[in-house]
Length: 335
Image 1 (cartoon, rainbow, N blue to C red):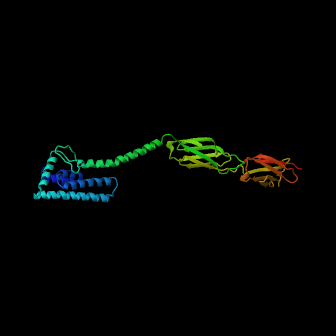
Image 2: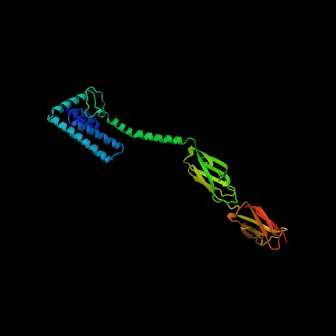
Image 3: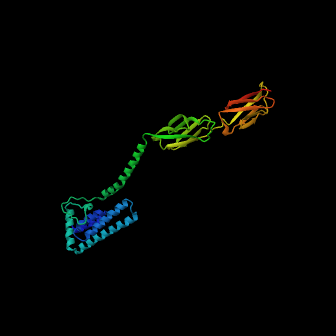
């Protein structure tokens, strides 16, 4: 290989944007000249900028500008050498190094730019390899893909692990209409989530109801239903959380008493009969002997003591069990 062919080879690498290959060929040429240090600095800067671009440490425009400057500087250097070679004005030291560089390349030993350091020596017979453009691109892509694949693998592994075992759901029932006269709710708790179903009996306000849910159901909507005697049934849908509070309120089962008052023979409905609960409420029968006694929440109870009074009839005191679906029948005796 002659001098012109050697320099044209370097130019080819520069024009193909194979900067590191070009620097690898220039290094033995400038090995013992002052320009070697400048060349090595250019190589170091080129590698640094490429790394910063890869890691998003600088923006693309800034990185491209710097690499273009290095590209231009190398072109200027090689064109300078070509002019000197064409003019026959090479300095002796440059001419000697050029002959040495051609002999290195011609011998089959290629320059690996990754192993050149300022002040180092390259000797004929060294087994060194130059990285191709395709190989370099694959290596740069591997720097990106390997961390990404690692992160994705960790995410999938965490999801796999989180899908094993069970999740524990604690459900608390809260009575928002408490009364000293009435019992706390005690009823059935029904859970469904993505085809999974669980029913607990005798769930009260005294303690949490614990429900085990397959971990694979996490993220699916959970439906909870609760019903207890004397309380309004409630249903709620929510995402999984370790603790859930279900609020329940009493229904109207104990809010009124209805009935009919008759004479002692049961043939005549009595009008104007007073029905009362002591210190609470009062109602009167209509022309058909019927009444409806409304009981405030603070006086509601499963059993009530009623008094029936009317002029000309004996007073009747009676304790009854409140049943919203039952109409009571009472009879008054004449005095």
